[in-house]
Image: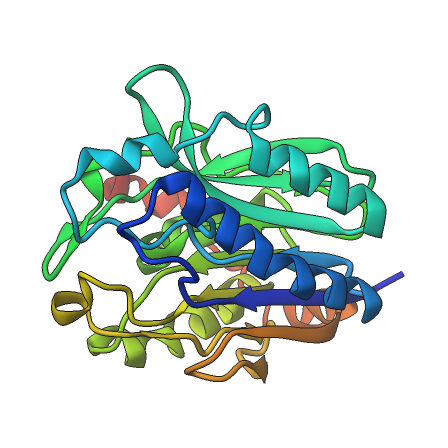
Length: 290
């Protein structure tokens, strides 16, 4: 079987950020459930959510309140609920949430749940920004320490690369060399220069590595940070190994994007371009020494 039906969910914040982190989590979960059910009815096999999907993108603030939104993985309530839904719908679910590892140590993490409901593992965001106008992520997230794992799911070999990670080509290549066929990039990115990059970097990475990529972005404004941050522009999409955006969501509303891909295209493209054959890792040592 080479055909794979993929789903991406993009969503705006459903509960005001002044509410408790548990109220926000419950509101975001409630808003996702109908779209998860819709994905199941449409035969989606791999469903992915946006970065830190149960909360606002809280990194414009420097408020310790948000530490309380971190959960254990897989013991926490969100992962356990998604395990139940994955089993119910025979669906792989990619779940980006804020993780508490040990007391006081937090990661921007994505849990990967197989179609039988089993927890396959997690990816921790490796590249952590600290840039204006409000991406103060180093306050909240420790850099990932799990490398670039590829998850052998019921339907495909799956990789995860989170938001800011996408600016670093090395991770895409590591995932592809580790066997990834489909890589998801859960994100929270706003209007400005990133809009141009949004439809440039992932297609370029798909071409360079001969993979399919699902890029997910949230939508709307999130008070009280919207004056500094601007608006999340959605536009989630799926791109094939030729760099073609084959399906794309709207820029301004909640949406479940569903598209079927053919994994056989990976072999066809790689056999044609032979980028992996022509790599020269023996000549790249200086890159890791600088």
